Length: 296
Image 1: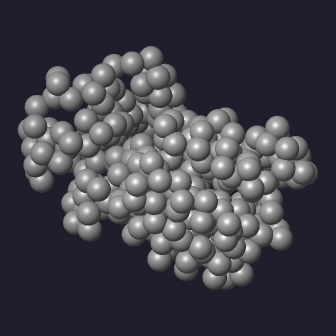
Image 2: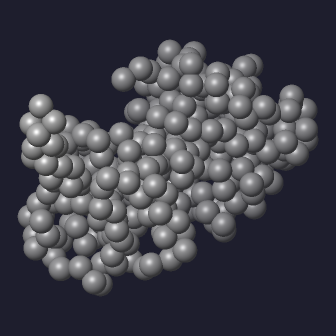
Image 3: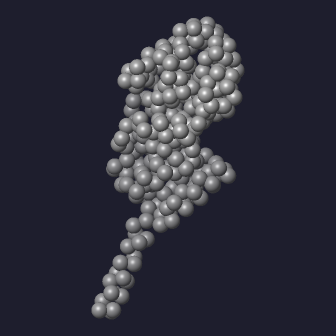
């Protein structure tokens, strides 16, 4: 019997390495932040072969082995993978809805799964209702590249009893659209549209909303640090968790796009005090929002 067991183990031993996946992370440059991310993914998947290469060091995608798993870390990596249809499936990270609409439009290649970097609109609306339960009119600025989000936003607002007040802002030098929106809204919700929400517009947006004693739900955590009231966000651990789940599945089962299921809430306590609001408990807020998330 011992001999039989030994022979069985010898037969099964090669299956371990064969079941491992080769995971290739791709980006424009090798940076400390990327090395940290690669190391964290390696620690989560010790049985897989995880490594990083720059786009400059890689051949065209069609020259790679089709059973590789590609993780695209930036826009340069995405452009490299879009260079041809042949090649292994890919997960594109750090891409927002607006960026994808600009680059891909409605025609998204079957080999590509998009992991959204911007927070889900429905989650941001629930955050606004949680922090400001009396607010009903949600003011939303939109531009040339973000207007396509309005229909989804209105659909998410209806079951919450919220009304979307949308305002086009075609010329950022003209503050009248912003002032008109602030005069007809209870709270401002920022879309992750870099044409509208950036370092150049931040001062005008924040000071104008403060002047009306109106809260701004920021498009991302960075805007909260700049002076928005709050936002939801996903950090590296949240991204690693969703990657881990996807990499456990065959690429044929990957969705076309998704958000990380795990998230946190970032709140600016100084702004909350200035607006006469209760202090924000990020953990309690995240828990309350998670209870309202749709189940898969």
